[in-house]
Image (cartoon, rainbow, N blue to C red):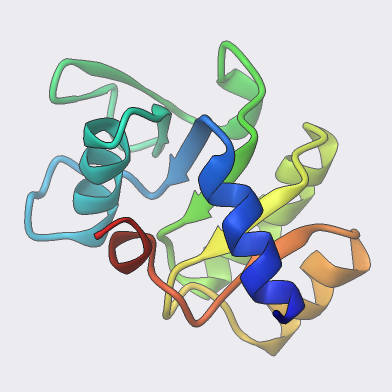
Length: 130
């Protein structure tokens, strides 16, 4: 089993997640992933400075605003937003980051690896939880 697959298995066993890029739009992955994680029994925090609430849940502006440190962060934003978010994730001491397809480029992955983060990319949380 490769490192990514091991990281994926470890992450799916963690119970507290944050979804960066959550949205109230049911057509978007930020909404679908947030909802699916909750349905599967995970404690999930949504992060998006554009919204205060999604489906009655408080949405936070940033990682540092969360009431507790999540075990994992799921990125559902453009890779240009993923890059600066890594600094915030590292500062919070979060080890696991899952990059949804389209949320990363080589620079993002290199930075996450340089920070010693355990990462998953080229894989979708929705597929993993199906």
